[in-house]
Image (tube, rainbow, N blue to C red; front, side, top):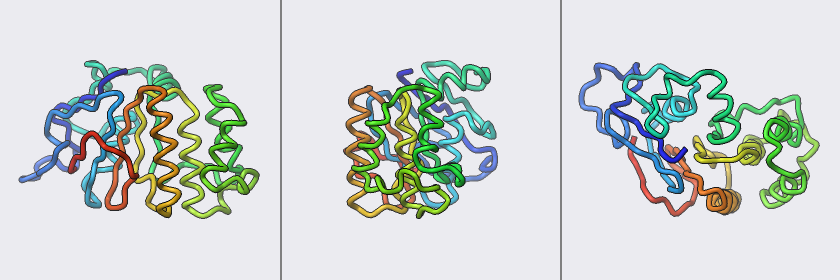
Amino acid sequence: MTTIELQQTLPEVFAGRDGIVSDVWHRQTVFQKGKKYLVEAASGTGKSSLCSYIYGYRRDYQGIISFDGENIRKFSVARWVDLRKRSLGMLFQELRLFDELTAWENVQLKNRLTGFRSRKRVKEWFEELGIADKWDQKTGRMSFGQQQRVAFVRTLCQPLDFILLDEPVSHLDDGNARVMARILTEEAAEQGAGIIVTSIGKHLPLDYDRVMKL
């Protein structure tokens, strides 16, 4: 997959609103593989909705979203499963970790589906992100910032054409945000992946190709 295109896309809940000013909604917007995008938004303007629409998790929007020119509304469940395994990754704002599982077990759930990462590589990332001591700790007993880092590592356990990150550093200090940015940049460069980051304030420190206002 090389392009994600939005054509006059708008959350249904916004239908009928006058004066929507956005670089994304109700416009023709193209995200290209290999590029880095920051989508800045105020709370309540549809930031998480945008990610969920692209990821195929929600369909309550008007307009068209297409991957390489193909309308995603036509995709079968099997097609979505394959895309989320082999092409499209997402770090949800609410993370979606299993509280009763350890940090490693949460990452392993994804990696078992893809077989993409070695245990050694995952351990290296845990060390770089300052959570090596949380390897065998249940995520329900970890801080939100620690959980963000676990969820980030889990997101990287697959091949990527595009990766969506919804407020990925909301609970991280600047040092860990820089480490996350470096790891993400290296991985995206290696795979030629596109990066789409959303933010309502603090954002992942990357060299963005384009900054959009939602």
